[in-house]
Length: 267
Image 1 (cartoon, rainbow, N blue to C red):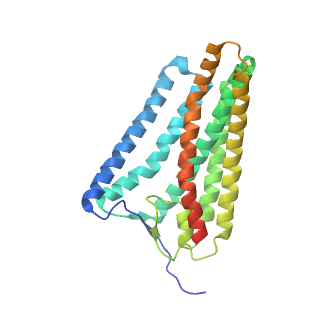
Image 2: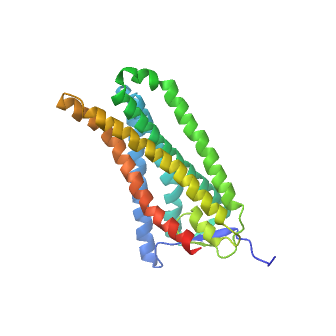
Image 3: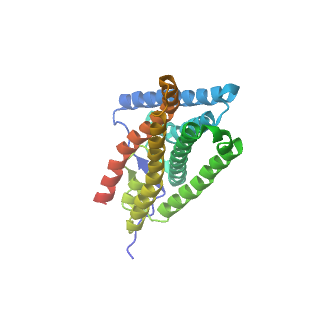
């Protein structure tokens, strides 16, 4: 086996080589981080304080806001700190933690969106059984299931990625650590990793979105049968927040997916 140098530190791609632009970008990302964080925290506070919002829909919305706040906290602070301090370095342990948490929070967010779709389906299609099906105990059990399976999912992908040696380079072509970029740096066979990512991603993501789409097909077909127009508007209005979040998730996913596929193809 040929000799190689094990990588213990990675270099993230900076936003610019110009010092003035680095400061501007770091302040811009800091602003985005603070606005997003405060917005999500505001949702958490309001849905916690207002007792009128103590129902399953807002319970899951609160969970989703906490996940979003944690997700951006994992990615953005390191990015704007590096830009502000004019450095690109991230230690291997920091990269491990970042990948684990990013995968974990994406998984939890996706499964939480799926549970919210079920909540809307039960509320509109089976309103008489809503309190029994979506009881506080059931909501808590589903949330804990998302968290525990998310820990297993993220732990497996993180461990399977960092079992590989990295020796081709230590430059990650991204402003945070992600698995596709790391696989490109490995000096060993990564085909099994790539297949695992695609299969698990399609399995979890495809399964969740299939369930969401099927739920809303049933919801819309049920709502259209309501005899009163105001009832239809009220039912649709309760679905708007969830549909909006799902669309944002899909748009961001479609933005990331082509780059991941491109990395796999050129590897």
